[in-house]
Image: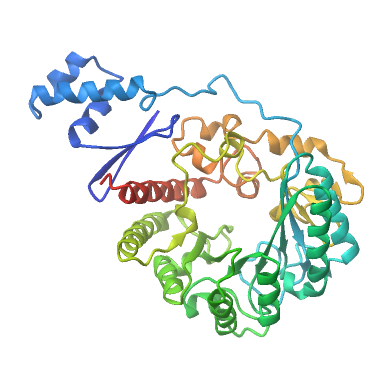
Length: 450
């Protein structure tokens, strides 16, 4: 399987099953269109009016050489099927420190932080039990992770401060390394919290949607007042301290800012160089959900962003845009390329009550309740369903060139829009494929191949 695309006159060919990327001229491009359907003699006759015969012959030699090296027209190594290991381990928890929030984000999938239930804060007791559960369920895996999440986790900063040293102690006793991340809207990210994150080598995901009018429209306080000024001040203070564990500014764009590339550039002007801006996922009953007619505009914005990122890299001012980061050299490991984030078996969410769910987007849905950190996992059938939700079990992924990059897409989105883990969210697929093309183009440019 090949995927061919043109970006700013650069012809790029991806050999899907080997992952090899080739920059080709127009002659090779035309030959590849016919290569598997016609004989060499037929192709020569077809193209002889446009190209010199000797050039066509030389191009054939190059194509055949790449084919022999396993870099072109490679077959699917798992065409007979793929069976994931059934003895996997839990490697990460999304630990909900608070089912409450101090903002009222319009697109919040968590029902303003409560996930369809009452407000609540994680107790130190349940938090410790969650850490014990992770250490035990991680088996022989050395590296484990916890992301403090919400709602707004900093509403429960007191407990977070107790759980981090406890987690480090338990991990050290078990011969493991534990990584902590905090996802926050930034309202409470004062200097005390900033110093705590730095002192404890914690990564941070910082929520900002872009320009003031964009952010304030979607992420207001309960009073209706915008939160932009407060959170930007806190984020800039924090980033200027150069946290060693790193950060991402994480935003969401909607139908109300189809020119989202301008929001990425606005973030860069604020001094943020590690940026993740994602399309909203929302039902058609909302005014901010994307419509089919918006897709050309969104594609154009990704093109504009790609050109701007390349220009800034050349000027020595690179922006690390999360969704343009893909590995063209065979990584990550095969299970991750086929199954994605590992939600439902390697990655689980924990509520303030200690209940376990496949990920944060399934929290509060009783049909996906897996068990509890104190009692363990009860619904192994649900876990096996998520383990089997890989690209070889998804009909829509079978002939998709991007399947090893998107890994079949988000499980929560598949359930929300199609009611089936095995049926990907199609709008998400379209946008993801565009991002991958942009990412490949940038890597080709960086490598000096175009």
